[in-house]
Every structure is written in C-alpha cells, then in structure tokens.
Image 1 (cartoon, rainbow, N blue to C red):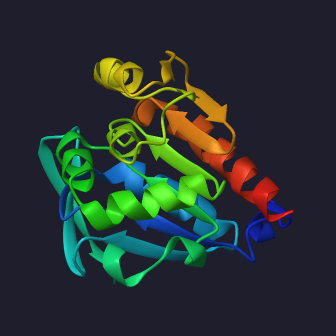
Image 2: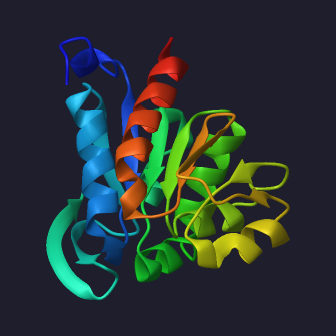
Length: 188
C-alpha cells in the first residue's frame, strides 16, 4: 500500500459485523485489515461482546476475534461505512439479529457505503434495502435477492450507489480494492 493509500480513510469510522460463530474468517479479516491499513478507525460489531469463533470453508473452526461493541449500543450515525462478511452460519445468525439488521437498514437508507460479501446479502434482504438494486452474492442467494426486488448478477464485484457486493472469498482482492475506493469517495 502506498503512503497515500495508508491515509485514504484517516477520517473514517468503519463498523465490521461479526457473528458469535460461523463468520468466514478471510471475509472478516481481509476487508477489516484493508480499511484499517488505509487509516480508518475500525469497530468490530456483534450481538454480544467477547470472543467470536470464525470458520474456514464454512465448516472448519478457525481463529476467534473480539467483538468490541454490540449492535444495540451503537447507531448508524457513528459509522461512515459498514462491512458485512459471509459464512453461511454467521450470515444466517446476523440476519436474525434485529439490532444488527436495523443498523444496516438505517446506514444504507442514509446513503452511506457498505461492503457485503458472500452470504452477507441475506442481511441486506432482511433489512429490506435490496429493492431496485443490482448486486451479487454467493450463488445460492440469487432467488432471495430477486424475491426482495433486487437484480442478481454473477460478477466478481458489483457497486450500486455505494453498496459493494461480491460472491465469495475468491473475489476478496477485487472486493477490498472496491470498498476502499467507495469508502474513500464517500469521504470526499
């Protein structure tokens, strides 16, 4: 990362969602590190504070990470951008957390950027912010996206009015570059 990239998000605060268990590790760590390396203040958000168990390939336990703040103790006003990783179990858990869903809904409705990858768009569907948007996700979510009024496309990364979506961990490089660009442009 160049010197200019290391300060692209110096004035930004980014919230990264993390389920108590089942979040795909690289979909959490890579975007989190990308925005932190660009100078953003990063908060890890979840339904409860404490350690959260991530996974690799949905089934293999991986490292644990600390959830620093709960969804119910923060507001959309505090964040310039949000990141919602995937992992089938983690994303399913996140979409059932009313406070997390409401935080994401308010954030997107306020026109602020968000990066959502893999199964993470389930939370967008639950937040009712997909109607009229084009996005991508893990391929098994395409019917959910369409039923919520969105247009699903099979592309590495899709940007729709600040909402950045990608399909799976193979898309992480493009996803991270794109969220960095979108989050930075929202700061200007």
